[in-house]
Length: 369
Image (cartoon, rainbow, N blue to C red):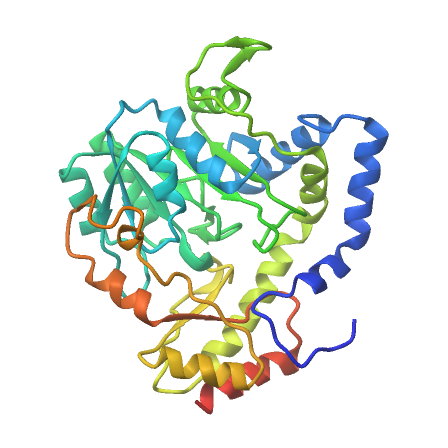
């Protein structure tokens, strides 16, 4: 591939070039078998991803949003139940809550980690949350996820882990998605484990919940044309996506390490006092995004544009401030840190296809700002 002067935040062309043979092999395998939905490729991927995570059940679904929605539906919460979450994760969890006729209940986040504190989790429970969704944001495992799980369990509150950005991240040798009652994953193409289109999965160690999830992903059928659970949908992973994910899963840890290597260079070599860098250690981080903070974001964006370097904002508008429902939902505390982060976060290029000189160019651009 010819080297481009522009450094994108994610290089999809490089990914497709690297995995072209796997993509072709995936299609050929599925065509030969002649089953396009819920066939052997789905079963194989579910088994292999379950083994990789160290979890009992993986249920493949159509996309990450469906994974969250089905996860909530499987809990069987009464209409109007409060579900706790943070407001800095792009709105995906909030939409899943609303589509289950539940009520979002927002808490603030720590300004360094972008994750909820233990005190905020306790506030959600004290305020009546029947379930809580926590997001391992930017590829960083929540350091106190085990404590959050323990608090929820002792309080009789369900815990859902949103792992759409944390494929393979670990705390104490245990992977994200395995601490709560349910974990949800997205395999959107730009994810650390990304398909050729939309795909997702729900994971659990709870046999009963897993059975409900499998039923819900196919209309709520216990058997064909027999609906036994309300809230079912058509959310099945295509066989081609499952086969492709199965082939590239073997590279996930290597590519995560490649991402960490880039992030380590950023952390060690970026020295601009106008920019705050993410704090991370070893395998808790899989480098989905490298998100810096600056009070001079607009000026830095212009500087990066001038340097031909890609960037993004994850995320510019807190969920509770979205125009469609601003002011409608309860806050258990002031979301000061959430708003400060929305005003200061900026994502810079981080992916496994960056060349060393590209990394150097990004570092030089930040330091020269």
